[in-house]
Every structure is written in structure tokens, then in C-alpha cells.
Length: 624
Image (cartoon, rainbow, N blue to C red):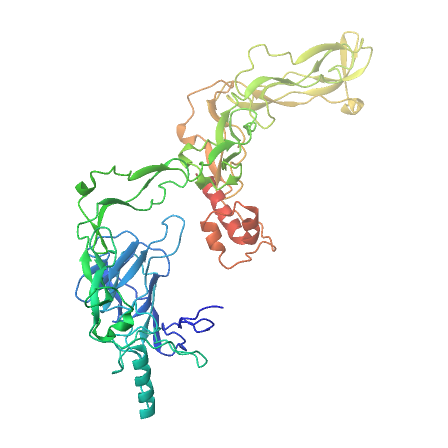
């Protein structure tokens, strides 16, 4: 069987929230709230007042911040974090109780600071916040006795049923018979009845069940026995000022032999008074704080921690001068740290071929930021200063390379007798759209070859006369000539009607001509492919000054020089809209901030948010 809080076997009584054994939670009042005021000035700001007699004290920051909680007594004595000195987490005595100061791990936890104490307090205490950043909210809660509840501050260590200053705790009587009954009970137990004492909540006097046999009556007290101090309790601490209490036993006045306490008058038993002991200070020690967050999220970084020389005295841990800890080796205040291996740039493809077959163009390659696990992550995870180029210009050399020839014409220039066949010869670049430039050399292939369709015997043919002068004095012009239909006989030509030669191909009566150069001109290639498909790219072309004979020249007017580079595709990039790409959770912005979009699950669950940030990053790379 279990033992209840009243120390009786089989009892089902428990202590309620008010600390009352067998209570119904109505003997006290819970005070709680949240301090959410917006503060502007740095420094100490009062949050809440803890009254005298408060128990179950809980002061907790609602989330981690750079603020600190502080505790001070109404008399002005600092208990925790006073005078701009931040104490380490631990236990601190103040207001008649022991406070536990907690500050969760700075790296792995998001919880805030807290003060916890069982109480009861014996004075009014003030809770402050050292304000350094926006207030995340401070939750406070404590329990105070109700209007008709006896103060819980006296005799906190009194066990159920023990006398209080020689008096047995008992409820008020409503009849003389009850008073006589209690008085008789007091005589049987060797204790005197008196006024109603002050009782600690949860520590009511024990009572006997109805079916319990009364204990044997001890002998009456007399003057042959008295109380004697036989020693002291063990000191509560080995150093730094502890406390101990004298121990009194009932002894025979003559023989000084110990006898049962029932032989002595309990009302005359001295009250043990606290005595100080082991007053010498404890040895100083290094109080080691927790490591700060690593200075770098990846790779080798630094972290720091606070090392204080501390000394315990009178249940308080004090910060002292560091020379007091000189007998101890001081721990390191800094250390190297590495949360993970940094991501690195990887070149995933070789350079593409140049965008133009000759002249100046561009080529690209795929460059990605890859984590140490092999996953492609955001470019911000890598050092942007070390990013390899993913686009560069390429020079394919001068565009004029070789002679281009056509096939010989199928027909001879003369229907009979000697004639010629022709072909076109031109010095051109490697692509059709370019203009002739230098570089083909002087070995120009022949444009004509002789041919003969047999002797002429009265055959009809076209006869062409000589060309006239060129229509222009320089540059390109035209020339004219007479073309007539004739019949050739032995040594003579007979002029015929042109109709007679209509079945023959008539030679041209006009052609272009060129007498001398008119001056140098600007020539350019076609534009290259645009470097980007949207949000602004550029394209290039080669521009040269050439003379009439296609030789490089410096005589062109610089003000008339065509542009070699121009912007292109300046329209905005419009991403394809996927109706199925939506955010499934309301807090997808947290996923983006935490850079979790590289994982398949978060990329699907927060599709819209992850897609937006990916588009912004691609636009940023393009603008680089």
C-alpha cells in the first residue's frame, strides 16, 4: 500500500497546487500573465513584482533573445544579473528561497531564459529585463495564499503531526466537549493544548483512524528529566559559510542518561537556532560558460565562451578577481569549430562551341554550387568571389579565309568556232552572310576557260560589239555595247533581223564597271547570337575599314563607324506558370529563409515559394 502525504499507510491524500495535504486547490490563488510591452530604451526595465509568501515561481522568456532577466530584492540587493554583470546559469539564494537560473544552449535551443523557485518568499522581489532587442514576451506565474489561508513561510521543514513551539496544531473547537476531548488527547500524547498555531500549507497534524488502537501512555513528566544539548547537526556546507542546528535529547538530571522524549516536558524543549559554520571561503574556481555559435556556417570558424573566476560564500556564487584562480589552469576562451564542410564550385560541362564560325563570338559552360553531399544548392552557399566564369568571348580569327568558286558554265560563249566558258570566283568568309575581306592571297583562280563547238558554216549567231566607257569615273558603274544578229560566211558577216537569232541566247548588252576606287568604307559581319534570351543580353559583330580592293584601311570616317556591340532581348523573363505548383503550407517563407528548397520534399511542399526564389537567383546571375 502507498503512503499518503499525511504519512498514513493506505491514505490516498496528495498535496494540491497550494501545497495543502488533501487540499482542493481553493486555498490559494494562481497569478500569471505575459509582459509584452514594447520597450525603446536599453537597460533595466521592471516586469513584475513577486509578493511575500509566493510559491511555485516561474519567470520564463517566451523565445530566445539577446535580453537577460534580472532579480532584485525590494531592499535593493541584487540576486541575479545585477549591476550590468551577467551571472552564469545556476542556483542563487534570495528572498528566503532558492532560485534556479537557466539559460538554454545558445546554439541548439530556441528557448529563452527562466527563473524557477519553489518558495515561499519572505520578502517582496522585483523581476527586471535587461532590454537590448525587441521584447519576445515574458511569461510569469506564482501562487499566493488565499485570504483565509495561513502563511506558508514558517517552519518549512515541519513534518505532519509535529508540535509547533510546543503546541499541537488543531482546528478551532465549536463546543466545550470538543475542547475537553482535545485537551485529554494532548495529555495522553504529552503535549499541552493552547492557542491555534500558524501552520504551513500541506503540513497538517496527523490524526488517528477510527479503528486504530491508542498508543500506550508514556510516563508523566517530572523534574527528574530535562532537555540537554548533545551535539550539533552536520554543517550544510564544507566551506563558504554553512549552517547547523543544536540537537537536544531528554536525559536524566542526575545520571545524564538519554531517556525517551516523553519523560521531558515538550513545551520546555529549546527551539534549535541556526548557527553559522565553516565560515572560511571556498576555493575559487573557473566558471566555464557555454560556447557561442560558430562564426561560420561551414568550413573552419571560431567560437568563444566566457570564463569567470568565481567563489562560493553564504550560498551565493560571486565573481572575484582572476588572480584568485591562478592556482588553476585557465580553460581556453576560444576554439576552432566546423559545423560542416563548405560547398564548392563545380564545372559540370565543357565550353560550348563559339557562337560564330569566325570573328568574335561567345561560348558558355555550366557552373554549379555543390554541397559536400553532392547536392546542387543555392549559389550563396559558395564563395561568390571564387565562382568560375560561365560565359566568355571567343575569337575565331579573321573571317576571310579562302576562294569560293562556282561550277563552269554549261554552254560555250560561241555556237561555233572558238569561245569561252565562265565561272564566278570570289574571296569570301566561312559563312554566307559575311562580306569579302582580306586573306585569300594573290593566286586568284581563272574565271574563264576556252571552248570550241566546231567550225562555223553559214550559221546564224549573235555578234557583240565593244563596250562603251564606264558611266562613272570611280566606283561601280555600267557599260553598254551593240549586240546584232549576223550570218557568218567566208570572210563576211551578213546582218540579219534579230528574229533570226531569237532561238539563241542573246549576250548581255549592259554590264557593271569599275574604273578606280572612290575611297575606304566600313564593312561589318552579321550580329552574333544574343547572350541571353530575356532580361537584357548583348550581341557583337566585327567591324573593319576596307578599301575598294578589300584591303585594310585607316581612311574611313570614325564618326560613321557602325556599332560593334548592342543590347538585345531586353524584355522581362516570364516563367512558365504551373497550375499544380502551389504552397501547401502557410509558413513556406521559413523554408526559403532556411534554404531548404534544395531538398525534394520542401521543393514540392513549397513549390511556389521555391520557384520564385529560383527565378530571382537566375535573374541575379544574368545581371552579373
